[in-house]
Image (cartoon, rainbow, N blue to C red; front, side):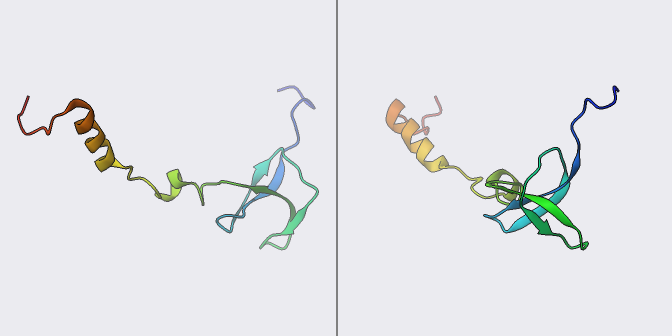
Length: 86
């Protein structure tokens, strides 16, 4: 790799305000706001709207869709109850 062409990677805290969770990771992002972390150091903090702590895909929320509504809509559209076996 060529020297001095890559952005600086540093420890950064990403804070999900919706879930009340925070993650310390490395990133090239920077922020003027700082937060004290559990190890006694202060790190730049970036607030995010969604993370793995609050997103339904990761938390398992809202997995069941309106399956009954889809079946009823199919029956109204095609006029079948499925009992005939055709």
